[in-house]
Image (cartoon, rainbow, N blue to C red):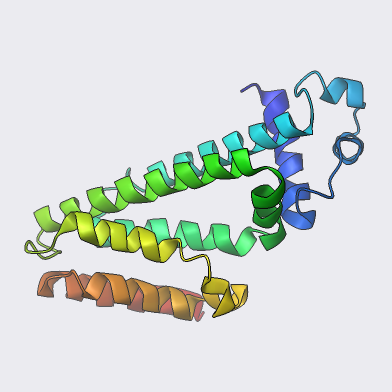
Length: 208
């Protein structure tokens, strides 16, 4: 993906996150970029193609950011905190209308996003569980496949916002409880010590 297209997609991201996808026309995009529609059509064939390239770029950015968490020598619990903080930020920054529009008006692109997200979460959690067991932070007697699927199922609960508002669901308080809920059920005593230390660090950072 060339730099010109990346710059276009960054502006498109701003528009989609602020107003949703459906209401943004190709004229809006061209106007915001101060280019002609003819120039815009040199990079995309139509709005559907633009949405598809936007999704592809979002997935690439997400993979790049998550991969950074594996470069610092974190243990399994520290790694889980870093990934969760990043995903929590994504949730806070996202306009619910964007995903709604994607699901309703661009189902093929929504399915691509959903498939990529499912595979990413599944593979990451399975690797994290195996790493934690090897480090002595997670229980050896758990069924890693079942725990991974339970985590994925919980993360995909489509009715979650009937119970929590977006503000509640992305709050530090709920974030801490979710990590507590997941890690305490699989951690060894050694892992619990690290978990409690990380929670204190997180709460201190957010209470400054």
